[in-house]
Image (cartoon, rainbow, N blue to C red; front, top):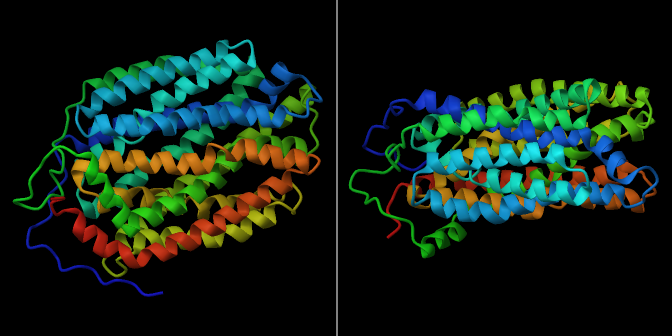
Length: 443
């Protein structure tokens, strides 16, 4: 596979990090952490919620429970472009603050739900709140840190995915064991509101202050400017691969506790022993996700930054190779008995998560600052519309068609991991040229 050589270096020295950048990054990381904690306390408690709402023996339970993830993702992806458009025009910290408070209150309301359809509605509002944050936060980071540091900085920001997910699994499982599944939803409300207030008080960085060339005009985004995204191969292939990966990760994250506890270990979740098994699975999977995901996210970000001078497509190369290596480990884990299979789940999670920092950095580096929030919003729309918005119910449906054999749905997941790796390796040859063009005027 050919690799495009880097464009000639600019005569302008790269800017240093902005004033207050590290403090702002710390706030963004903390908010993102709670973002993923909220998502995955639902996943670990899904079997208990399903039993309360549907009882035992309902053939459509898996499909309906998958809809809880879909409701969140649909509202998230549909409203993300709206918030992306606003973020390109208004004060971004205020948008994020409002979003954090909305999703925190909605999460608490999830714990209050007494019937399935009420919980479905609360997950819609969680998605709307998080949509105000998702496309906005990376653009603030891009205005605080220069291009050469963005891969590693984005890796720190997206550590919230494995760490927040792990906390969600562990915390949600423990709270369910000590109290009930509703308690974990109540517990995230106050911290979320506090973080929203802190976000509202942060100063707004100037757009494009660290990557626009001298003399490049700063102006508001126009709708036709988004057409440039269709002419940016790096953006398109990053999005396509990320969509396949999001399908896989969404399916794994939602169904893994039930898959291991009930399907692979045969736990009866109507008994206390079954609940204990589910809690133990949540803690183990949470710990694996935290350690493997944390180290992989940092390693992917730092490796892609370090290799950038030698391999201009390093962000794609690190991500693609990680997915290809993680694929056989994941497939093997479907057939090796537990607890031994945990030894395969760990490397699978590690290699799959190598892409988190690099792939999320690519849109920042290949898009003009005036359309950057919109670019992230469109990415969010596509990766969830064709990724994890429908992967949980689809996998649930496949499981039902296979007579409850959850390996059938997880084999589809493995194919998506492989597809992501292929698409990202393809994108490596375009990244240098697309990055060089991004700092020029759109006119």
